[in-house]
Amino acid sequence: MTAARRVVVKVGSSSLTTAEGGIDPARISHLVDVLADARTRGVEVVLVSSGAIAAGLAPLGLKRRPRALAAQQAAASVGQGLLVHRYTEELARHGLTAGQVLLTLDDVTRRAHYRNAHQTVTKLLELGVLPIVNENDTVATSEIRFGDNDRLAALVAHLVHADLLVLLSDVDGLYDGPPTRPGAQLIAEVRSEDDLDGVVVGAIGAAGVGTGGMVTKVEAAAIATGAGIPVVLTSADNAGAALAGEPTGTLFHATGKRRPTRLLWLRHATDGKGALVLDAGAVRAVVERRASLLAAGIIGVQGEFTAGDPVDLLDPDGRLVGRGLVNFDAAEIPDLLGRSSKDLKRELGAGYEREVVHRDDLVLL
Ligand SMILES: Nc1ncnc2c1ncn2[C@@H]1O[C@H](COP(=O)(O)OP(=O)(O)O)[C@@H](O)[C@H]1O
Ligand SMILES: N[C@@H](CCC(=O)OP(=O)(O)O)C(=O)O
Image (tube, rainbow, N blue to C red; front, side, top):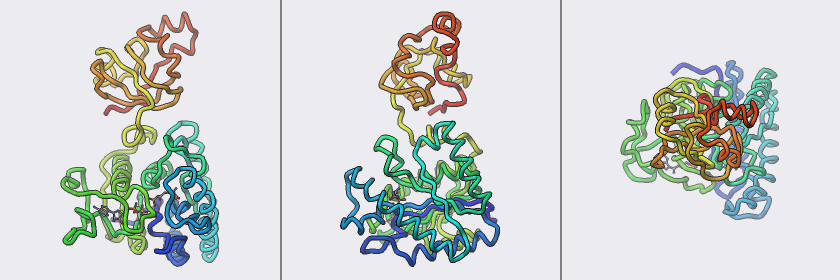
């Protein structure tokens, strides 16, 4: 693989903390050396770093990662500052400046937020700053949370038009089963989902500080490769090789083409906040003709959602056919059901003429 020009590097909590808990300064120092080295070769780097919660445990006298969301958020609040401070000091040794970017799910799925996040990170790169991204843990509540940073990193890779995503963990690649199992084999290359048949993808590692384990890494790889970005999964110790384009760990080849991120997210990770039930004609229009969903073809509405939320699209038998970002609140839809755009415009005004889900905001499942 040739060396990439713009890379998103994601490092997990398990690669940044000591066995006793708390940030491991030596590991951060090593990682920063590798990133700085890539920078001197002209590679633009965006770092997605986990570890805020893990870094907050020791200062709060906590022995292990708390289960309750509020306690995790408190730990993240304490730990994020410490973490970025560590990076800032280490980067300064190389004459580099860190910029903190905290994102929520909305920032990479809602159009206006997405544009904003894109502009900020692009500007930081233009200014020669090394952006350090994490989820905005203190404000993200359970329904709108990534939780793990693997999928966030895949969406960030898309957001910044990266040509490579490097996922660094405490394991040196994807194995065909839990790596602690005797005889587990490293998978060097994944060209399609078929290569994952029979692979047992398991939970978090021994460090117990990560989230999601291998499952979210494989999902992240599917999101990125499906959007045309290859992924290298390896250990933090092998970060240098990965950034130099040398074979290491597991390489997931790109399978698809670039697509809007909010569609990637809709397909891979979002559960609909509610659902719209379509009549048979609307199912055909949406599935076969890739048309927008109009009010005339909707026969039911389920759940509570507001305009801009993801909703499931169901056929008359309740089968899931797609998911889309809806243009109306749930409460507005009953009045629109089954009515033509022309009637809606005449009776309710021009704002009601628009599609309920625009085809650009819709994925088939
Ligand atoms: N098939 C597999 N291949 C490799 N690692 C696996 C596999 N199944 C489960 N794992 C576990 O996933 C862990 C990495 O996930 P996690 O602890 O969430 O790390 P991070 O903090 O880096 O995100 C590894 O330590 C490993 O024990
Ligand atoms: N945003 C959280 C990330 C949670 C987490 O542990 O993620 P990861 O280690 O990537 O599985 C943090 O900084 O602690």
